[in-house]
Structures are given as structure tokens and as C-alpha cells.
Image (tube, rainbow, N blue to C red; front, side, top):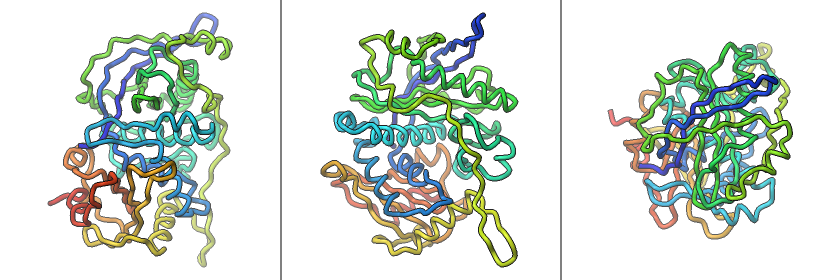
Length: 393
């Protein structure tokens, strides 16, 4: 059993006003606990860099250590928590880093449970889409963060993260920022033939980490949606009214539901077109896909001398344990390891069966391995890591 976050699932619809300014009506489907392991949170952020540029393992290790110095977890089965007072004492740019990194990791892990997609099915960042997908989606303008490939077709995902000041895990009302971003995503979906999408909005507060997940009521994703995790039926209906001025929306926010809204701009993001890096080779020019770039980056990291060496399923692994000690004594440390080669896909546990079978907080995707352990516990043996992550058959 892994750690989790408390999640609320919403179905929303866009309802234009007569004056042309749209409102959002969101109906709560229910809430419960979604498994989000620290190892998965670390894993998605350890690879969240521009692989077309210099990939410095020291930088990746430092950012992982910094993230886990703010976000932590107790025993298996408990909620992810944050060192909230430390986060409040941090500068805005550090708070933004923690919120964005947590939001990206929680969205990815939560979507694995909701839609039972597996990393082998494909996950792409809209900032570094392969050439064929750039042609399909375009290279600029407002767009979501990630593209998931699920059984029902491609599904776009948007991740946002915010600090929260109130003791309650969730706010009682929606924000103008949520409304604005949902409208931007709806416009993007319309421009791409009704493309399916969802938005996750992570809250980092004094009582833990929670996430609001918004699904468009017009999307036909219910057949792939897992609702077995819901333990409390929904009862809330949010009417997110259009506001002509964001300042007035902030001024009218209830005093008992404070949040920090200024950590990340909600203005439309304009992104320049991203093109794959071209590497000259003897026979001409070769365009490397994001997968090729990642494989090359991990190969370079494997070739560098690591503090830890072992093997999984007979494949050598190199890496090192990184301690989350940037803000005092560490409560966790994480092994960031790279395999010499990819394992056969059939050898790796996938989907919900893998999560239920695991006893370690560990994640293996392609050639990247992350293992998180609590300080005071023994570091797991390679035999135990292999037994936990690989299919026994």
C-alpha cells in the first residue's frame, strides 16, 4: 500500500451568458483517496527537463532533494503532507517550484489510477512533442501540459498547484483562476475537434496535499474512468461566475477560505514552437524524438560513475541515494538509478495490479528507477526491488 492524496472529482460544463461571458457549473462526483507514491512524484519531476539541452545529474539530484525537503510522507497508507510553515517562509519563486512540481507529479500519478494508463502506453509533454504530434496540435498558443494515451484515445491533462492557508484541506468555493483556465482548455478542445481533456488543481496546505480533478461533462471518458476509490458521494455544486475584473473576484473571496493565488500567473501562456534537436551524422541529418533524447540522456548518466551499483532482472543499475536534507535533517532519501538497458515490457508490473502488489515505494519506467525510503528504515536489497517491480511470471 502506498501513500495517497485526498481527491475530489468534478464534472463541469461551460454555460455562456447572454452577454457572451461564460460561467462554469461544476458538479461534484465524489471524493476519496487516490494513490500517489513519493517515488512517482520524484520520477516524473526527475525527467521534467528539456532533454535537448545539457542534462546535469547534479542539478536533477538537487531539485529532487529540494522537492522532498518540502513534500513528505508518513507510513504507507497515509496522506502526503507538506512542511507548510517552511513553505510559507520561502520566497515566491521557490514556492512556485514546489507547487508546480507537486502538481505535475500528483496529476500524473492520479491519472494512472483514474484511467489506468501505463507509462508504456505513452506520455508526452506539450513542450516537447514529437514531430508528428506537433503537426497535429500546433507548436504555439495556450495548451495543456501533458498528453496521455489511454484506451479511449488521447487525453490532455493540465496540472496546477497552489499553497493553501486555511486548515481545511479543500476550499469551499472555486476560484477565478480555475474558471479562466477551464475556459482556456475548453477553447483549446474546441479548436481540436472536441479533444478530451481534464484539469487537476493541487492544494498544499497545513493538513496535507489534496487535489481537485475537473472532467468535462461533454467528454466520453466515463467508460475508462475508475470510480471505485470514491468513498464519499458528491454533494457540492459550484457555479463559477464570470468576472470582468479579477481584482473584484479576489476582493469578494470569503475571509474564512484564504488561499495564495499569486504564486503562478493564470494568464494565457504563449509557447514558441518546439522543434526536435537535429544531430549531424555521417549519412546526413537525424531528428531525435523525445524518447530518443531521453534514452541518450539516461545513457550518459549511466556511464557516469555512481555511488550505488546493482541489478534488476539481470540488468545493471547505477545511481546514488539522494538525501532530502536541504532544510534540516532528512526524513526521506531517494535512489535515482538508471538501467543499462530497457527491460522487456512484459517483465514490468503495470497498472493497478502493480500498485496493489508493491510493498516498496518504488517506480520503474523505461530505464529510470526511483526508490524512496524513510530515514530509519533499511535500504532495500536489489533482490527485494526486483521482486517488487518485476512480474514474477
